[in-house]
Amino acid sequence: MDVYGAIKERRSIRRFEKREIPDDAVGRLIEALLWAPSAGNLQSRKFYFVKDAALKRRLASEALGQRFMEDAPIVMVACADEKSAAKRYGQRGAGLYCVQDASISVMCLMLAARELGIGSVWVGAFNEEGVSRVLGLPAGLRPVAIVPMGFPAESPKAPKRVSPEEAVIFL
Image 1: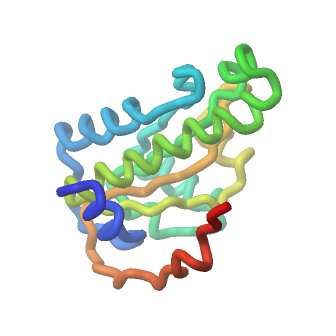
Image 2 (image 1 turned 180 degrees about the vertical axis):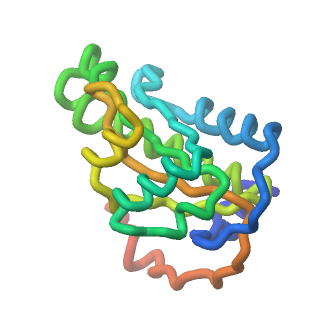
Image 3 (image 1 turned 120 degrees about the vertical axis):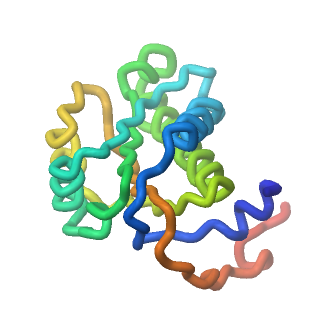
């Protein structure tokens, strides 16, 4: 699939088939995460792949009760490594660059997932402290996105997009 196809065909999937993601596909997803660009090539991000049902249940609770997450074969939590980024870039690194690093990695993962026929959804509504507790995150790792993944059991229609004239300003 070409990149434009992946961008335009990717959908937020919240219903998953009851089958595991093969190990080779998981490897490809991890590869997509790791090849994403990062500020100063610091790669100030960490990724937790959660398969354990009890942990997924606890993550769903911390994600404001979004129970559909429990049905995903894998729930990935992307974390910004604030300490790593701060060492080189100070407060801007800790407050922004590492969050950007984790975020662009998630987008690469989601596009790769689409190419592999794997559905995903970006979950941003969650209690950061609660997710940190559930995963036992060390100080300085900040969860910035939760991404449930699995083979889609739904085919949502494309959402409406704003026009280029509404979104783009040429100066």
